Structures are given as C-alpha cells and as structure tokens.
View 1 (cartoon, one colour):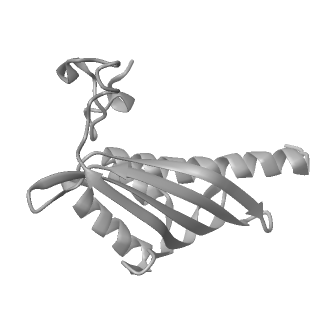
View 2 (cartoon, one colour; view 1 turned 60 degrees about the vertical axis):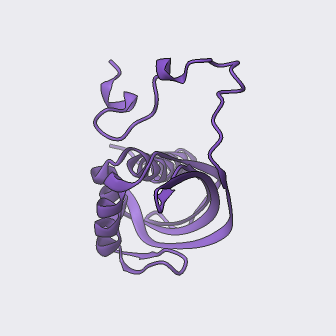
Length: 176
C-alpha cells in the first residue's frame, strides 16, 4: 500500500487519539473496565494530581475497584488539543468536566469538578494509547441534591425517565 498523504495521516492519528480519550471517559462513566484499561499502554504511568502517582496498571486496578461502587457520573471532554510530535508520539491536552452524584456518610449530593489532563501518547503498531498521564485539578463545586427536571417541564414524574446506568444496563450496551 502506498504511503498516505501526511496531512490525511495526521487527521487519522488525531482522531484515533481522541477516540482513546473519549472511550476512557465512557469506561469510567459506565463502569466498563475494559475501556479504561485499553486506554493505557501496559508500561504506562498515571499521575492523578496528588491522589495517585504510579504505574497505570495500578491506577486501573484502583478504578476497577471504585467504579462499581460509585454513583452515576458523567465526564465531558472539552478543549481537546492534540499536538503530533512525530509519527509515533503526541501530546494531548483535554479539560474534563465531571458531574457526579456521590454519597458520603449516607448523604447524596451533586458535585461538579473540572480537571485537565496532559497525556503523552504513543503509537505502537497501528494503535495509539496513553503512555503518561498528568492530571491537575482546576476547581470543584458541591451542592445539596436538587432534581426537579426543569421544575417539571421535562416531566412531573421522574420514574418514567430512562436513566443512564452502569454496564451492562446503559443504553450504549442495550440499544439496537
């Protein structure tokens, strides 16, 4: 096969990197440990902004333990910039806004947290993954639980709503 146009290859590489990062977030939101694990190279590293700094395989083990117990959460990727350094290395910066509903000491509350990741990506063979992630925390906001579904404009009976869920019950796994 002839070599691709370098600009086309750059777009394909950036899209592949974006997919890795977005599927990692889906894995966190849906308790899909396979997606979380596949985001990192086996010899990768995770520096989670003061809460963890070590081999990615150990971080994945922590995540696998936490996710089934965590309440629903949504990670939204924003302002993603991917700089290709070579044909096999790149730096990706991404802001991640997380909305979650944790329970602490028996009380549910809403939390929003903004973090930023700088990922050193490596391409091995035809596959991009995270080699080193460095995360920093930007801000956090918490408030008492308040869920009225737009004060009844969406529905007055929340029990009729199809809600997001963990694997295998979420619509990403059940929708035909």
